[in-house]
Length: 143
Image (tube, rainbow, N blue to C red):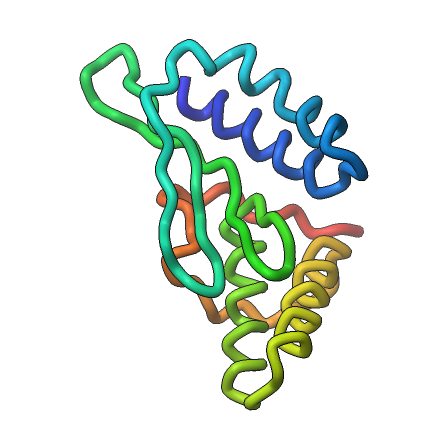
């Protein structure tokens, strides 16, 4: 059940990134909640800066708990995969090290996310507690 729920959550998160209204954002999560809502035991979140990850805690067929990563929140917007988190954290660290202002840092983070999503090469050395506990498959190279 965990791989299916994670795939639905990642897809819903990417849909939410593109949504223009709160209603569209909510609609993105319909399939995920139809499949998993009855089994959600709780939620989890990290309390880290600049990125805080979160998701749902489930109890499966066995007593072992599993977690579904539903996205991270950052000044760059919602992040849906570990690779997006790493790109944005790397941009934040570089901006911080350069002594940039808060708005300039947010601009760098948003640009790194957009570059990553557009398939442009970005630095990928970051990755702190915004990272989900399980690594999703790497993005497929375009072209």
